[in-house]
Image (tube, rainbow, N blue to C red):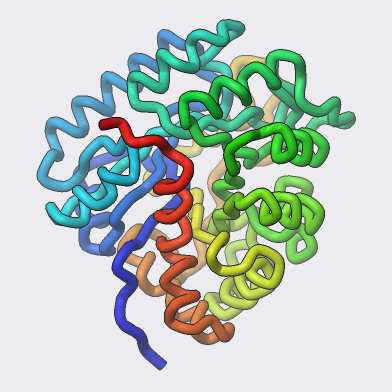
Length: 325
């Protein structure tokens, strides 16, 4: 069974070793928009340096990509045959202990920020801590400030209590940009039914991860198994609140894994020190349209498939992110 290609294809999370080749693959794969990770454990000044590097990428590849600040840039990208790049942070480290830096980073183009990355942060608790203490005093202030600005709160890597409290506290819907149903892969990095139900009740969105450590059968997960996983998530979320957040780390060296896992907070080598092999059916943006085959085989209709591959993200960004104009 085949279907017409969705009008909008959006990947809700990537951390590639960015290059013109990857941007060309985004175009060849038909990606309308991508949320790209800018940093992990960097402080404010280092993050600004990364943003300078991104401005250079936008200038040198302006025929392929553009900086996205709101949903209007998704339409602009589609009209000009480019990919809109939304910039985000997987850790609140760049705001240090200064609530004012959230607005500064927003003004510089940051549109997503996670409240935690695995560990306890000044805002909340990550999933790898033994005890989840929930949202902190500063976390409540940060949530309110992100809501005011229209910066999207991302709960990937958050602990269960922190996630549930954030969903309840936030005046705007939040996302879990890259995670999968926990009952299909026994890892607290994935998401419980309780969190998904709370997310759906508050009009949030889940981006299904294609990173092998999050998939039901790791690198050996088949496209059909991905489709079945998406169907189970849709039974709770509905396709209108379900997207893709592939967590694609194309061409990144293994040293990037160590930076992600260890940062500067430890001298110990963490358990995962190298990138696992991607499943055969998803190795680059060229493979993104092929995800439709797994969704259709699992019982999604053409409309549901279109929503999961980009329509739901498009709706969420349009409704949640104020116009920059």
